[in-house]
Length: 182
Image 1 (cartoon, one colour):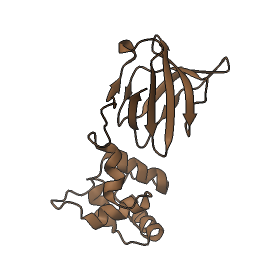
Image 2 (cartoon, one colour):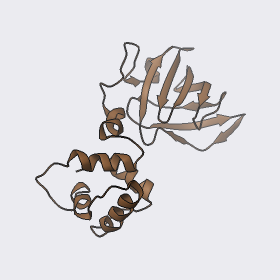
Image 3 (cartoon, one colour):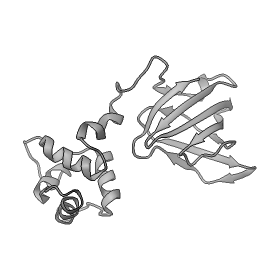
Image 4 (cartoon, helix red, strand yellow):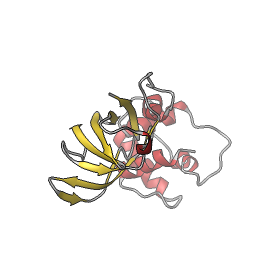
C-alpha cells in the first residue's frame, strides 16, 4: 500500500480524488496515458488500500508511479523521506525556537531547489535573510513553533512590509529536506 503522502501527490497531479474503488479505473487510464506505461486499475486498488493483497508492489509498478510524478525511479521519489539520507554533521533534525539564541542563523531547504536563510529574533520569531523559490520574501518575519526535517513547515503570523499576511505552508510535498546552522 502507498503512503498517504504519495497518494496525495498522485491525487494532486491527476486531479482525481480517490475516494472509491471505481476511481482507480479513471486514475489507471490517466497514469497509463500520461506516462506511456501501463498500470492496471486492480493494482491501483491494492496500492490505495481498497483490496487487500499479499503481494508487494513490483519495482516496475513503483517506477511507473514515480515517472508519473516526475521522478526517474521509486528510489528518487522516496529519497527525501529517508531520515538518514543527506544528513551531514551540520544537519539538524529538529529546530525548536525555545533552544535558540538571538541572532543565530539557519538555512532550510525543500524541493524543488528552495533555500531559505532565517535568523532567530526571539519568542519563536524568525526573520528571512535570503529566500530562493519560497513563498517567503527577504525581510519577512514569521512565527514557527518547530522546523522538523522531512515534515512541512507551518508558518504563522507572517509580516511583510509592516502588513500581516496569511499563514504559509512550506515544503508541503517533500517536507524540509535539510536544516543547517550557519
